[in-house]
Length: 123
Picture 1: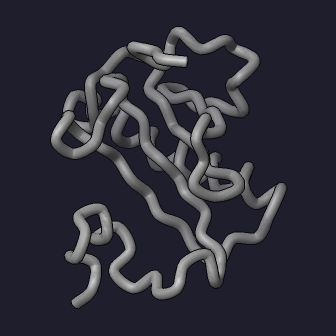
Picture 2: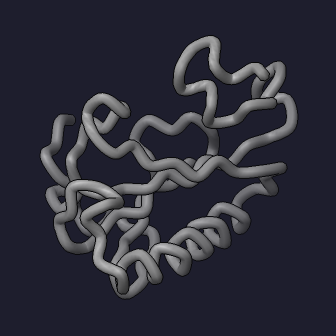
């Protein structure tokens, strides 16, 4: 399913919300519990969020974490936002990924998000 913004999703996909954000499970999860935190107002990316939205984003991340932890016990997390087409953004409606990580889910996790560019994760 191709969408232009996450407001097109049915409400039954929502698993939680804060004042400025709603949460859904990622449609193409990279790990169990992979959650998207999405702005209730259409904003292109993080840089278009209001100051109040940026403050509430922390609440939304913590809510997502607590929901994940009702189902599993991750060993870590990656928090990620793609801002712009050249950074990999495909839906131009702000969303933040909270990706649970588990021991052994990849050979060597050192470098974490640095691996978005092949060969740059190892240092």
